[in-house]
Every structure is written in C-alpha cells, then in structure tokens.
Amino acid sequence: MSKVIKWLLTLTVTAITLLAVAIVYVAVVIDPNDFKTEIKSAAASQGVELSLDGDLSWQFFPQIGVIAEQVEFAHSAIASGKIGELRLAVSWGELFTIDLSSSQLPVGSVEISDATILLAELAPNTFPMQLNRVNAAVKNFSMTGDRFPIKASAEVFSGIVLDLETVVALQVDSSSASVENIAVSDLRASIDGLTLSGQFSADNNFATAQGVLLSNRFDLRQLLNKFGKTFPELKMPKMSANEALTSVSWKSNFNVNNSGFSTIDTQLNIDNQPLTLNTKIDHSINNLMLRVSADQFDLSGYMSTTPVSSQPNAALFAPLAVPFALWLGRSQMELSLDKLKFADFDADNIYINLFGNQKVLRLSSFNADIFSGQVNATGRVDMRQTLPSFDLQTSLTNIDLQSALVATADSSDITGLLSLEAKIQGAGNNIDEIILALRGDGQVTIADPSYAAINAEETFCNAAALFAGGSVRNDWAPGTQFETGTGTFTLGDGKLLIRDLTTATGNLSITSRGTVQLAQKRFNITANTRVNGSSTSASGCSVNKRLQNRNLPFVCTGSYNQGGKTSCKPDENLIKDMLKGSVYEKLGEQLFNTPATEDGDDQQQSDPLKSLLKGIFEQNLKK
Image 1 (tube, rainbow, N blue to C red):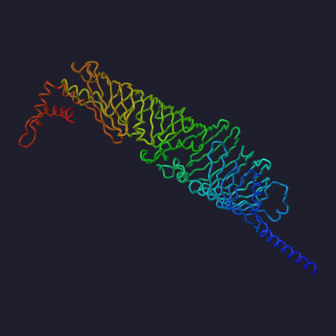
Image 2 (image 1 turned 90 degrees about the vertical axis):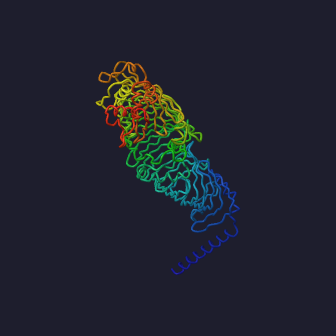
Image 3 (image 1 turned 135 degrees about the vertical axis):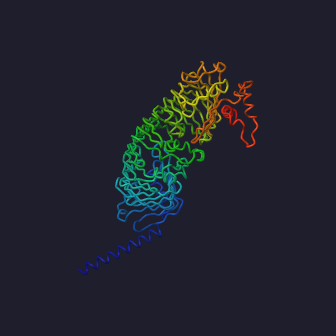
C-alpha cells in the first residue's frame, strides 16, 4: 500500500511539475499577440469584426484564457463599441476537448471592463441606445443553446446607472453568424428605482420575439426629470398634486414580427388609475397604432402649477413630442375615455384620433361631452421647426355657459347655450407667444342668454328718462333675459374682435361690436340699442318718439378675470349731444353752478328734485 501511495504522490508531483513547465513554456515562448489574426478570423466566423490595437496577455487561473486591451468590435445585429479590457477564458477540462478543426470560438467565460457599447436597433425606425462604463461578467458562455448567467452594469442617459442580472440561452448559426434563438429568463433590470422583470425569447436574428415584461411601482416623475438631462422635452413641470406620477407600474405581453405585424398589450397603472394600451405595428409600412382606453381618469392632480408662459421653450408641446422620440415612423393613437375629471368639471365620452409622421401631428377627430354640450375638433401641429405651428377647426354645440364660466372664470353672471364654429391658426412655444400669433375667424350663437349683472331694459329706460323726460322706476327685476344672439368674430394681434353680435330683449334690439384683450382678459364692447315701438316691453317703460327707431349706444367695459368688474353705461358723447339746447342742459348748468352756503353744503341739497337730477347727471356724464 505504501508503494501505491508513494507512486500516486510521485505521479501528482510530476503532473504538477509538467503543468508548471508547460505554463512557463507557454508564457515565455508563445506570444498571444502572434495569434491576433486567428482570433479576428474566429470572431469574424461569428459575425463579429474585431480590432485589437492593444496588447494580448495570458491568463492561467482559475481558467486559461487571453486578456485583451483596447478592443473595438462590431456586430450588425447586436452592438458595436470599444472595450477597455476583455477577458476570454475556458476551463482546463474544456481545453483538452477543443476540436481544432471547428471554427467555433472556444470561450467558457467573458469579462468586460470599462466599455462603451452602442446597441443596434432591435426594430426598424427605433433609436439606438448607448451604454457607457459597461462592466459585465458571463460565466460558462455558450452559443449552442446552453443556459449561462449574465451580470452587468452600465451608465445610460447622462449617468443613470443600469444594473442587469439574467440567465440566457443563445443559439448561433456558425455558418451565417446569425442568432438563431435567444431565450432570456429570470430577468431583473433596475434603473434608478425602476425594476423590470420577466422573460422573453427571440428568433432569426431578433426578427421575431415574444414574452412578458413587468415593472415594480416606481416614481416616474423623478425618472423623467433625470432623463430630461438628455431629452429636455421629457422633463416634467411641477404638478398640482405632490403625489402625481409617483406610483406607476405596468405589465406588457408582446409578440413581435419585424417582417409582419407586432402586438404589445399593456396594463398600465398610474397612481392607482388603470389604463389599457393596445399597440399594433405594421413593419412593412413602419406604422404604429396605439389604442388607449379607460373607464375614467382624474387629471386634476396632473395640471402644471407653473405658468406656461414662464416654462422653457417647447414646454407646451412637450407631451406631443414624446411619440416622435420613441418612434420615427408613422404613428396613430386612439384615446377612448368614459370620463376625464378636471378640478372643477368633468368631460365624458372622450374620443381622440391622432396621426403622426415626421414631427407633424394631425388631429383627425376630437369629440367630448362637456358642460352639457359637445366639443368637436380637427387640426394639425407641425413641430419640424423651432417655433411649432398649428391650425385648428373646432365646433362647440349647446355648451352651458353658466357651468363653463363657473368652472373656468369663477363667474355665474351669464347663462345660455353656446354654439360656435371657428378656424384658428397660431404658432409659438408658450401661451404668450401663441396669443399674439393667433389668427382666425368664426361665428357664434348663444341660445336663451341672460346676464345677471345688468338689467338692459332698466339701463335703457333710465337713459331715456334723461334724454327725453319721464320718471325713473326703482322696481326693476335684476338681470336681463335676451333672445338668441348670433354674431361673428376674428382673431389677430392678441385680440378677439367681435363683429355684429345681435340679440334682443322685449322691444329692444341690440347689436354689439367690440374688442377682447386676450392676454389682459379685458373687454370693451359697444352695444347699440334700438326701440322698435312706443315702449321697451309690455311691462317696461314708455319711450318718447324722439328715441324710437334710433340707435342708442351703450359702452360696456370690464374684466373676465377672477374678481373682475363690469360696467355698462350710455355713451357719454351721445348724452352730451342729445342734451344740447334742452331744459336738462340748462338745469344741469344751474345745478353744477349753484354757490355753496356758509356751512359748505350745496343749496340744492334741500331740494329732492335737484338731488335726483344731479344724481342722473353724475352717473351719466362724469367719468
């Protein structure tokens, strides 16, 4: 027995000595740099072009292999780039089973350090992605279908760290160097709080792929703001709710065929609000079709709190630019929502159909039920130039004005049903620029309008009493009920010009013209009133013949901003003209020229008639 043990020890020492001698011989006598041509040829047989400008050196433990520095590579279907250090190794056991007549590259493990990799487009018309500072380790690498683990990290999009762990099975056709099949399982990829998991497989050099990917709940707003360093259009403005877009997740099932049709079905959850996204891609014409649907979505928390005019350029059109950043071909999006909730009102039965091509977005249909009426629109947005431009054709039907003004301007003075047809063009990156550039025209109808702030008949009768004599009543009901009004308008230079807006109340016909300053939210409107008869209405006041069938202009000014005030009064120049030579002019002169008493009070204060007349003059003549 002792002889056997001694023999085994001798054999072991001899083997180790021979191995050491072999390693020393290989390290000293064989220079791996002499095999650069063979290495390039072996890589080329797998479809990889190599440039080996750095030195090659041996690695012996724990596996035998080659260390290469300053490697450049390119694979048309996968990636290209530069590698600071590349280690290729095989186990000692595999070394003795290598078929020297095979063109297969015998690699058991791959380690990459300090690399820059540009991934190829996995689908036509999608943008490539560059990975920086890539470090990766692949053990038991195989291109014959055996599973092997991959662990990697990289920086993407201005320093955002991507970590990846997965198991891959890769089958490569040695004759054509194409990827016959790749199966990815146990996938876990994380990028700044977003973690993706799932599995998928691809065939025929990624011509087809199918699988499922899902995410954790992550903070989308924080992630997009970091991506905004690379893609400024993705940077998010501050929103009205602090928790908006802070809890987002999705699950996607996909089936891709790059030579035919691809489908991606996604369940998206935004802050506990579910949406369904169905995507179809016709690769033969590079057309993407996206359908988005949901029962309801509360948009109130996602409204920007930053004034649009103070946001960076293109902020207004940023959401429209996102599809063009992700898909460079033709695209179409359909949106269907049963209810869209805003802070102060709801929109129901929403349908939107958008087409995109070369940064031109066409709105073929927009329909919604809002404020008890309907909104319809078509239009076009062109974002090919630095200054985006648009044109819009829109119609409003039976919009409840009171509900609309309460929600948008905090005013409830006006009621009626608004219908409108308009064609509008404009350009700009923010609201201020767009308001100044607006051009267009249209027509408007208001059915059964009323205005609670002013009784038009009372205003006219008070003016009539001043112009032609008569008593002043104090029993008027508040507000005015008008007949259906119609008119036209034009837009230009930041102004809305109202032309020939006609309506009536009682025997009073009213034709209005005026200007609305859109940026300042102020208006100045002249309303010509005309009495067609001897009285303003059955319960109104009698009208002197001198004022019948004659236009009496009233000037209305004010603001439709929150807290704004409105004033309507007879035109001052007309009043002065009509009072010339009348007894009222003489009475007015006497009233305003009456000397004061010793105690400083006007003498007319003791005369009620003079007080009444002076009040009328002060209200209608003084500014």
